[in-house]
Image (cartoon, rainbow, N blue to C red):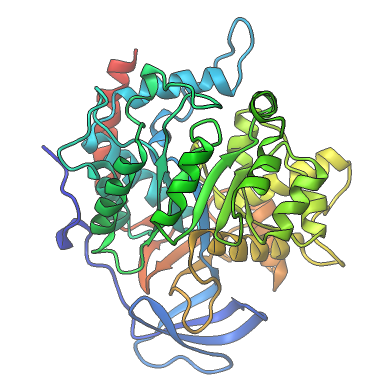
Length: 468
């Protein structure tokens, strides 16, 4: 049976409290106590501190803002763990990509939506309350457009609605297999557009997002491998939202870019594109000092995906120096091999500790590492996804309640809650998650987990039988 697209019945009614009252809340200026919050139309209408709860309020313990997941390929959650076999002549991102293409070939709109729904509820359970879906699976298996060219984008929107997660949709423009306008290969046929076709896709995306009141539409030229300079220039005027691009993830990509243009990828982009605060440069792993300094100077965001970058063997972004210079960053789950907001932040810090052989590398001036990582990722992630951040009037009514009953959080106070969640808790430290003023996660489980997980199990079993 075909899965429904967006309809009011697709997600079960979830609680909207008269107000929320938290014993402790992490606000933009630090920790506050006895905090009463009221939401209206999905945004915080009032934030009062040092006040008692009122009758009908939902009482919470320790709450922090929901985190933005700035880079996701939701469908790849279905192939997590299936690529962990060494090749006879070595394994790399490029060999991983071949299996990804094989998996992608087997997805239809229903199976794609089922996987995305599961990925999105797992994000919410981990503390992510908005996702930037870098969405490039556009066409049918034979490469032809669906009857509705935005069919697959509509399924992203439907999955966001079913899970309740906030959505910044980033439709991907992909036209070429390599630098210099090389023709796409057959495995990429489901991804390909020309500029006119992509403009029509954006029109369809706007319609698909209309039922989601706080959805944001951006664009994503896939990479400098997949878009020519002329195409990139033609894409940018088509939409005024966020602009995301894969860049300098792999050394092979850097070498190929130099062979094509005489410049490294980030160097070329900064010289030829109007990079500014709308832009998110995803990965940017292999950059020289002048390149990351250029990212800082343009107020762009570095989109870092530590779990995936480690899984694929990409390398380490020069985060210590970038952070010291005031660089903006956010984190994303990318391939969704493991969905864990705290782990993304933990691994970001641990990578730098290993590289520099020191401790608490990124936090400045004696600050808590957990508070610094979370605070910076909140601001950078929200900028990259085109929304406001933090628990403040006018910001999205999104909250994560930490479970102070968790053994790693016992007897903590203040920033130690954040340090213990990120560095010591592993799983089970998120008690509830509120998105758009609604309780979507209770006692660590999404309110629709049973239904969504059952559908996912059915779909995945069929997909893996055909994958071989």
